[in-house]
Image (cartoon, rainbow over all chains, first blue to last red; front, side, top):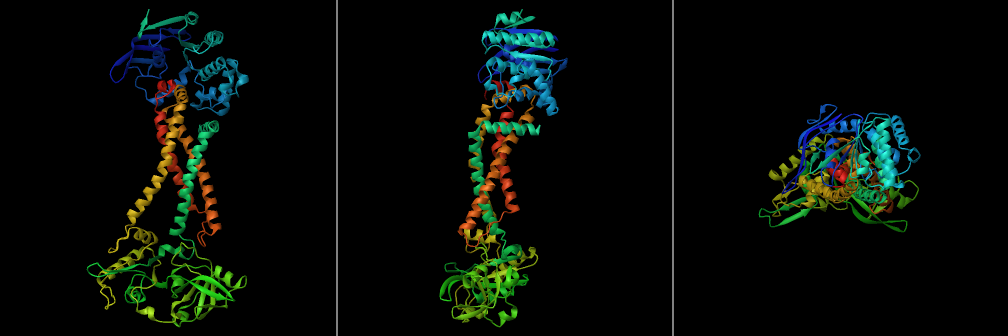
Length: 221
Length: 416
């Protein structure tokens, strides 16, 4: 499904070069629910960004479905992200100017699709997260947990191959966090969704099938 | 997709009313000023009245006389003698008309005193310019040659002197002379300086013939050709004549003459860059200055809008990050932001056009510019549209470009 080979990432600032990741090899199988753990600044978000094709590695290859994306242009990478990857962010990143329904529709805007079809898919995704009643609200009218559920609906609306979640419960209290976790688990079990989740929380990590630990930019066995 | 961009733009504008208001205010005000100026300039350079055949005429209204040392000059309008001895020798123009500058005079009529402009002309005047006769006719060659006391008046004069009754066949006293009115024309706007007057009479009715001895006087000459291309040749012929073959009054020291048969733009430019002892009109520099001023005038609000747009888009950096993460390409985002900014400028532009129409109407109604008429016209509309587009592009493209190129990781973190 998703393979990282010899991935390294360094950030060049004026004086020093910071190494965020070094020589990471990783394979995510279809239908897996994987968590990535590690202390702050260890490079787990950078790893997730590289897996999500948001960031380019300094060295190494990322392959999606055995397609090496090394030489792809911006337009092609954008298409790949649109078709294969769904993102869930710690701070939700909903667009406040748009209604819930329009927020969920967003990934479908970049596909050739009729307005009617977009509406249908977005409504179905909102039903899955239990928020169809709120689709004409604006994000600011919802609670944090509800906003994250909208963000999950947005991530799954395009039926991507893999969901990447960057501390999805990090901004929520434990009760709401638990709800979100249950939702992700059900998506994994019922819909066979592949999920990679970055987390700080040992409890959350235990609920996933496999935990990858990152320390100082390297995988720890 | 396009519809979606428009809907998004609409929502963004509504959610940020203050920003939208400031933006619209800036654009519409700037455009309004530019539109009003360009409409007035348009009515000056492309008159709608008797001078509507502006491309077929050139006007000679300035003559600079000087001695060899250039330490004595005598400049102003042309004298009759100069015209007769020099201008009438020109071969290129199909017609030459001469007329006195219009002068204000008091006319006493039925116990009322009315101030009106009078212009003395030849009969060619009615052929080189394209007057709209409401009633009657112009004076003929024969009437002109025989010095008949006939006059053409404008609507304003008819109204002032005779109210609702027709002026045709009525008498009007100018000075000590009585003229019979034979024609009524539409009022002439003040911007049409050559045609402008309230009453036109043959100059052959002049009480004295002193004017025939003047090298410098109070006369304008109009050169006419049915093919505009030949007018530049006429100007060259005229300048050539002035350089090599000019006939000037022998009793004066003045031996050199500077003048030219100019378009309106050239005349204006020559007035601005008054270069006495030259035939050059510098109209290219003049146009350059005008264009620079307009651009400068537009630059200020544009920079302001760039600033506003950048800071507004910075607020939306999370949106940019999200859109990129979910598959928007740089090009698609660029399109989205450009469409947003063009929509906003378009709205501001339409508002500006409406405002400028209101202003122009009130200038017309106020009588600030006598007989001025500023009709809505397609050319000014397209100038306006072009200005809007330039404005939108200047203020929208740079921020859009900058923002659309933001890396998604940076954008999601919320900034540059």
